[in-house]
Amino acid sequence: MSIFKKEKGYTLIELLVVIAIIGILASVVLAALGSARQKGADASIKTTLGQLKNESEIYYNSDLVFGGTVDTNITASCTVGFLAGEGRSSEILAKAQADSTNTPTCYIGKEVWAVHIPFKTPGAGNWCVDYQGTAVIGTAGNTGVCTATPTP
Image: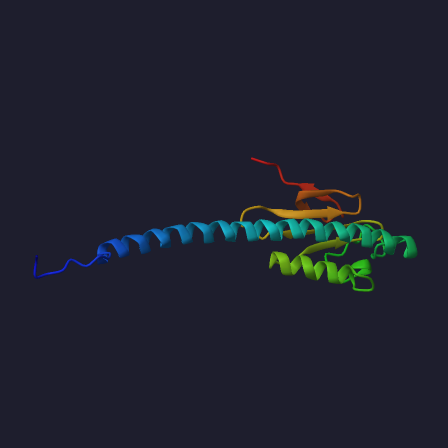
């Protein structure tokens, strides 16, 4: 019989290897989670701006204009006409801005309007909706319509 008893257990090296593996797996999961959150915010932006189209139709049916005095004098502002907060439009824009963490760009005339806001995902472009029902990745032009961004 030996004087020294060999105790069962793990060495310091074995424990450090296990901790390192757990750390690597955790970082991979967190990176994937961050990407999923950005894509979820992008989907929310699309849905939210889709509601803006419905709100504009309600406003137009009661006032017969979207906001400006004439379409040749389109205003680059999110604070006139149906976007001014008389209906739910200002709440819709505020939600889209909160999801995007960027400011929307709005063009509004008497019978035209267009709004775009950048997606939360970096490099994904802008989501644009207009009075014609167009909803595309693109930008709101100063003519009150969306222009699609060409895909590479």
